[in-house]
Amino acid sequence: MELLQSVKYKSTYFMRVHFYFFIKRLFDILMSGVLILLFSLPSIYIAYKIYKREGKPVIFKETYAGKNHRLFRMYTFRIKTPKRQLIKSLPPHPFPGNWQQGVPDKFNFKGDRDTFYTVTGLELKKYFLHHLPQLWNILKGDMSFVGPKPERMEIASYYNRYQANRLKVRPGITGYAQINLKERAGYNDMIHHDIYYIEHFSPLLDIKILYRSF
Image (tube, rainbow, N blue to C red):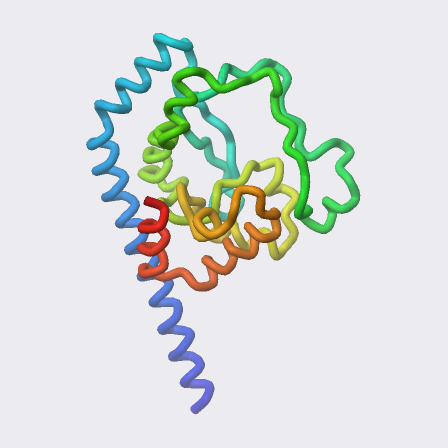
């Protein structure tokens, strides 16, 4: 009898999970499509403004780790000067011994220090408008409106087994960790919040996250 109840519970749970992700993906497709149409003219204006003021490229593309470690190119409007040939170095090579156990709580990201925000970039960043091209990432299925913050592939490649759990779902434009943590929070705090979201996801929780984000 207990075995039968256990099977029924697992069956109900998996049906609920699959239904949730189906509804979530449907919402992502419909809403991203609507917003792409709604913001088409502002996006064209922004692209033209970047091109006339700062030149090419208009769209900045960078590789991130998505669901199940699948790599994807995330799109944003370029808000900084073009990067030079000196590319970021993370983690340092050879990497410190503590990276063997997973990504540490505190570390420094070394980017190209010769880049700086453009005039148009500062305007876009103030109102988060540089994220508009990510609607295409959502429509393609690389991202979702709600999920863990996209992670750089250089960092994700050093995840331990626990940290890798945050890659079980699509990354999001906003998420549980983004609305609950301060900017200077430790990396482990972000991991814990993301995994809490993955273990407790629901349509209601997504709605709360979206509401608080707006």
